[in-house]
Image (cartoon, rainbow over all chains, first blue to last red; front, side, top):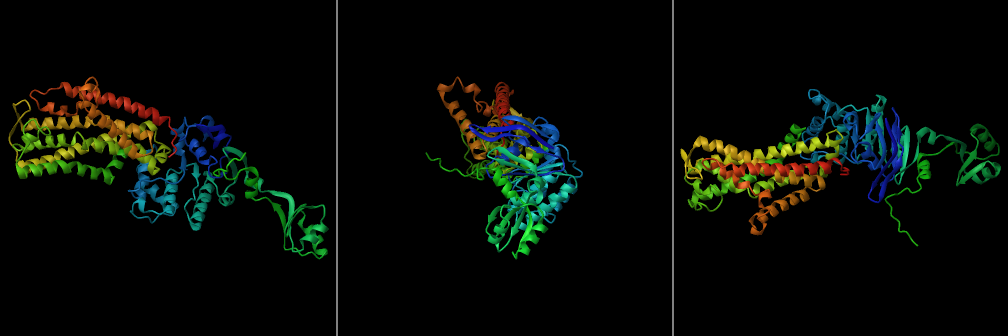
Length: 305
Length: 268
């Protein structure tokens, strides 16, 4: 659905995006992770033809971008860096104007489509008040409604849960999962690991403009072939399992082998209390921190010497 | 897309506030004239104002002459300067472009909406001035042309309509300038002020004898030529030159706006 080769963008001397090869497949919920300032938004803008690439190629929905924007973009719903709306108009009027602005989207179905998307994003009961009286969360929902107006095959969402409360985040997550179940491919950029871990099937990690990791989430967080034991008698367990312990961190031991039942039997026989035992999995956080050498691109440490 | 832009313009409270303000000064002048009965002597003050006391049907022209040098172009610069930069500032530009609206189409639609705004403003000012003028000063069946011959009221009406068209076209140069600047910056204020600087520079150079060589090319040079429509017979020379000159300004500035906007990274 999205395919880039050597996509690069420099603003003057600054290399914002450095030769990335994105590969988003049909049916993915793709999590595009990166710290603030790592180039996520610039990449999203290039996919949509807002920012023009310095070099490299972009294909969205099997068509070249930005050359074929006229054909591609009507099939894409987008939310880029926060919602945008005309503040003096109502939410409904805003959606009608945006719908009328582009090609496609027949006028006769406009009213019912607007009602449907407002319902979808939880703004079904919205009144005639102007958008300037909306809360941040309501604006975010309106932006999402605008992206959904044309029933897109591909959703490109930049930080979609910004400004929402935990309840709202959950609602949006459920909405995205429902859309995904109906066949929509979702490309979601975020700096929130938890959000991506709960939602996505594939992830890409951007670090200072480079794509340092791109894989299926369940591969990345697959069992490592080791087991984790938590025990109050960590020292005795360490002694008993000497040679098999890879790592000891307080009451937490990482032990080679996946046979938890044998391991448990062994420990219990020696009178070692086991409070927790299970396969060792890496969390997405560990994966990302390992891949991204510098986690905070907006940090500007002074260079000494 | 043009219809969408016009709808947006008409639904903005600011559009109507601007038009009301454009009517304020001519109306005030009319009231003062009616109360004091002291008109400017012929040849002094804004054109046509001296004849208004004897014939209220000429007041629309006087009102247009009052707003033409400054108020109208300021209003045009405000609306046109906001057109692209305002969308950038409110975050709506990127959503229009990914809808998708072609960048060229957006520019043309913006210019069309500005044109409609100017036409609307000029027609409203003329209409209000007609009502005010005929009520305060009465209507005479005939009026004297600038050349001294008499014109019937229907002749006046036709020529006033022509004047409205000419004045609307005259504003396109300023509008195109503000639109061009509006594609350069994300600040509507900067674009508006830039266009005003362009306008003031033009008016200033026009008064300077040393700049005589430049004067035929100044965008404000032929603005007041609409008075020539009220000569008998109509003096077309400056009118056609004025329209051609505006055409050149629109052509050049719109091309510049297009060249800049279609190759620009939209980072707003």
